[in-house]
Image (cartoon, rainbow, N blue to C red; front, top):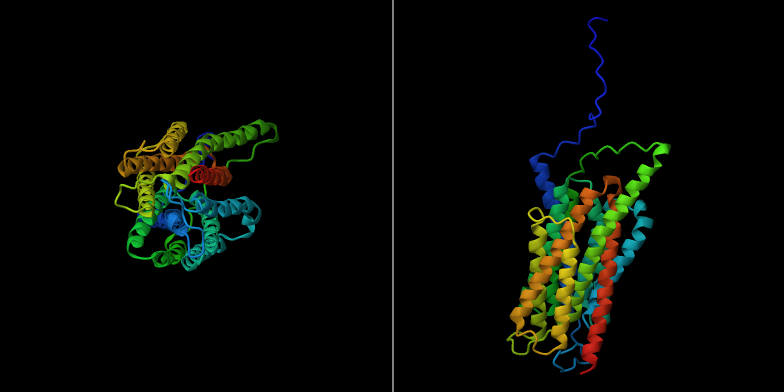
Length: 400
């Protein structure tokens, strides 16, 4: 007995140590994989929005565009936005019901097939309606992919989410720039064909580059029946975090998508050497460049409160709405381009900071639910912006 070590009192701070960080090689693989996944998931979505004016070009036998000062197509670009958002919103509503029965590998394959089918269908479309159907297929795939990969990223170190955010930003500027360059030399169907390489890249990244998730952090012990108040406080904390990040993000998204798919098509500068469709693509490109810059600077600029960004975006949208209503309020395409760049900086910053804040404020077991709620709110806001964009098209183009 004398040789036995004395029993030490239990240390209150002796909680299980968090899992060690992955080695450098694993860190590189995780970051690269999530960057590619974000790129491949969002790039077709961006291409369809950048191509909205081209997709809605009247075909032979369809109603021609009017020759007002807005140079309106028969259908507003808000229709492309709705086709690019509503199916994804429906998928996100149904996913909590069927998601537990779908292994993640099956989900990823389904995402890749939807994206491949979308690009193929739009490239082969013979009319506006069939083209919008192809856009809708891609929306369903992108919606499934966003929830799947965001939830998956929560199982990895925080830089996984940071690289996903950067990849989605790169998808914006890459898709807009790629389509802008291809469309300058090729007709619409051929300018879409290079994007068929994205679904195979997604599958290779997920199945061969992304390693297994590190072991999860141990869950906290279940509360004692007498400690139900603590559980209620935790649920309230999750709801509060989802609202504090989701509400301003939804407002930012409504304002920026109303601008992009409701007002940008109406900002026509006849004195510019660029035709109207090229002006639209240029504004989309600069907007996406701003998104990429702000999402990629997430580690350098962290914002805990997002309402300032929301107010800024609403004011910018209000000014551009006035610019559409009042002729010559904007002196030229250059000023509109600068505003589009600023709009992208605000939108990208709101997106990246919202999900990073959720990762810090919400316990790991509740993060998938919080992420789903915030992304669902953002999709509803974007769909509302599409409807508002169609209303703006009808109001300004119908009065000419």
